[in-house]
Length: 532
Image (cartoon, rainbow, N blue to C red):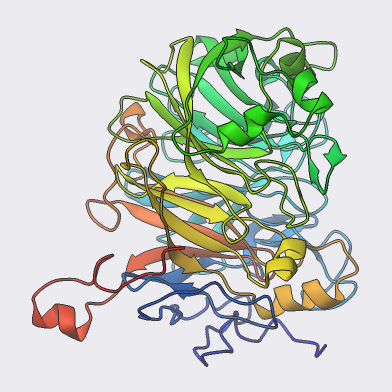
């Protein structure tokens, strides 16, 4: 395949709408990738493709891989590249290691607007901050934390959230015990790191955590992404949903760790031992059937010598899922509805039930309740699977994005997409996924997909979908207030991970001529979107 250079376009060759990734002192021009098409289809898994957004949105880049850090430290030199290996920032077999900026946290301190991210690639994890107000691009991105308080090695980070009770950024390391777990960086009232130290929070256990979220009581909810044993072209369920109740909301050094247990219709628990023995257990098919409902309860965990939460959850009789990844509370429910995604097997060859994952709703009387009800909100299929990041756009509109992976992209000839799911549908009714983003494949990702020796990922991935008003107080907890994207200070972001590692801010599209004629802004109903 032709060798591209990073001075090329960002996945927009097909329509000729160039968004140049320029030298490190020049930010890409405002995105021209919005296409007011009546129908949005997934991009084919071929060559370089555009990002295509729904008719009511456009986007602009706020940071990109080649952007230098304002305060580089050793090999931590750029937003999306670590140069510890001496590799060049080019599409080259020996290129610099991509650091893969991942999930986003938007916070406003005083009059400063910041976007924080952990990095899940390269030689080590670290945390950066994008100053959204800074025009000087050499000062826009700063390194705020890269070393542990105990001197240990820093793992790469996937999930991130803001804990207003402790004034900490909480990051998750997606690795088996003892390397995985939750880590914290404390910020002051200006949004700067207090000491820049990354502290491991041992009380929250060690596991392949990805999703992390606070509730109004100060508890920390964790969603784990670890696959079970391989069988029948897929994998047995092997990951858990956790809740950590601290002894005090302002101190996460001690408390109680629990895992979710789902019960069969006869009241008996669904356990890891059962699903490992029979990965086609009828319970899994029932769990992925619209209209089904299961009773749940939280079971307390006793951590072993390695602090491992996964083994402790299995031992306690908790119920494993097929790679759950991220979770969020539905706004306007007083933290009584928790939604989480399940990625599934990411292979069309799987013959297991639940192979394509889905979205689930856990309903409780309060965030601290010990029992609840679990039901499917959306059941995945081959065209809608690998469901990963999740975020509410409004009270009823849930943004869900895919991370299907290169192999499944090829199998279905479709790159990843982002969907809006209306969660107000009554139980038992088939939910509809409306595509708001058809992710493309930028030139760098195309090179990595075809030419990389393997230490950098291939196709672009959608990650970091985030809607927030930036309020760093308890009032600003995700789920505490009903979002109003693009108004009243609410902003939206997503990161096009891998390739050029561009983080985008979502913006409202200009009114269409027809909408302007009628005195209305273009919106979700202005154009028909593909529902599939």
